[in-house]
Length: 185
Image (cartoon, rainbow, N blue to C red; front, side):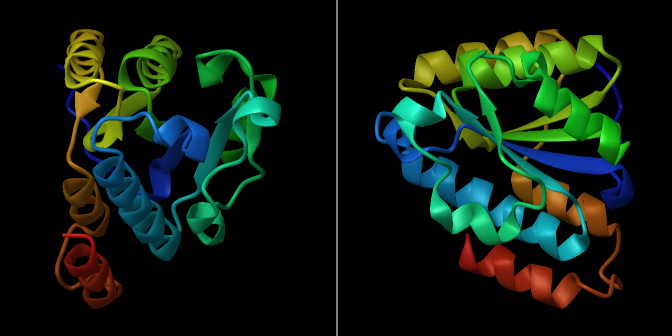
């Protein structure tokens, strides 16, 4: 298993397909949405770029608007299940020049796992937040998490990611990040 020390200056958060039409069928969708929003807020506050992908945007709609203030890059429309197959996604990552990717969104066993595994194959350090990803059923979610872990993707709780980015309680943004921690408990 890889040992990844997350640094805010090396990280990117990828919000995968957090679209209302998809979210309506996700097991524990409120948890997935809340934890994903928590991480997007913290990332934005700490200067970590946030990319959002949208699967089949014309049919499934756009990213939930509550995320819009925290998305720092143009949204990536995609038809492929792995975001890595999108030239726009690859170009965005290349332009950012960051090698640590933190994944949240849906569905764990499809778009999240395929994206994660391809990113690992391309030499990225990939983290998935189990509390901020989901599938239509818990068994699909668990199988997706197992597959990713077996493929070298590190599972890390979204709150742990936030604290790891800050590294210390002396961080200049610690108190304001703590407010996000409390409001998304």
